[in-house]
Length: 66
Image (cartoon, rainbow, N blue to C red; front, side, top):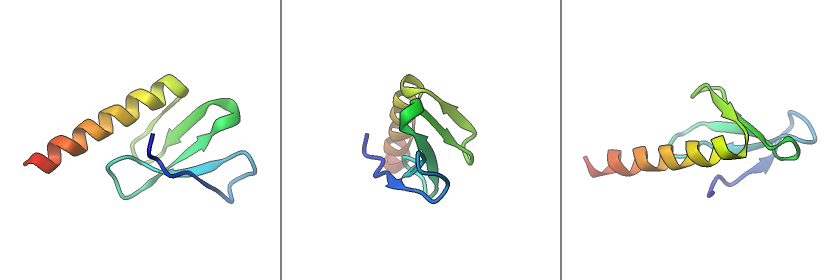
């Protein structure tokens, strides 16, 4: 998905990744198939992450056109 995850110091099962089209990060818990972005206040499972990334990339793409 192009999120560039890195291991975090929040816990051994938690990763931090770039929130698409932003300058902040989101939290990934791959063993539980969960994600959460505190800044965007969005979270969920794998399907929700796929949808969220697609929406953010579409928003960023449209924003760059203007």
